[in-house]
Length: 208
Image (cartoon, rainbow, N blue to C red; front, side):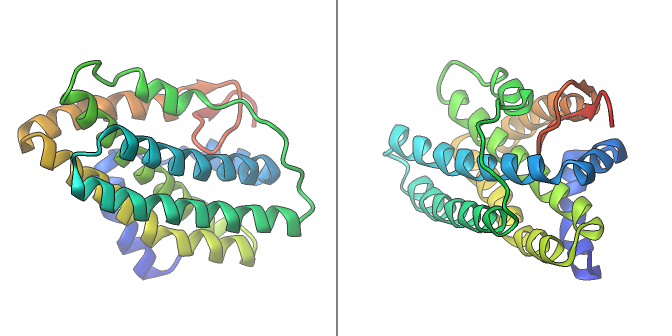
């Protein structure tokens, strides 16, 4: 990771309040096929989440504009990951999802407008963690993957900021800060606790 990339990701680490455990990085390096497969799945899910929000909240013009662009970028990232998989003769089997995103979404309010606020904050947290993991992995990967993951830092960082900015348009700063703090406590536990399966957003693997 270059010095400029390190500077770019530092505010995200500060926002998250924790870094990816070294045991997860070690496991990722030993399971790069699964890493790429689940990364591809994450990009599809990110695009789907953005599109679902666009369908649900049609009366928020700025949300529609930002998330339309985000969905296009996530699908482009999926295409890039899938192309790398094909180049490396990696099959694309079905993988069950990690507990990470579901664990965060379980915390989302059932009532508006906080349902939207929480959903946007969760989106910001997931994008931030993805960015942090790209940066953590990049120095340890082969040249092609290292450059690819380094290239994703800028867009993922922007997605994180877009989601937070949208949340602040729906609720005041104090509400957003309070819910962000609560959701980050859950997120930090999800990536630090033992996890039976390795995935892109999984916790500490039970066996490395």
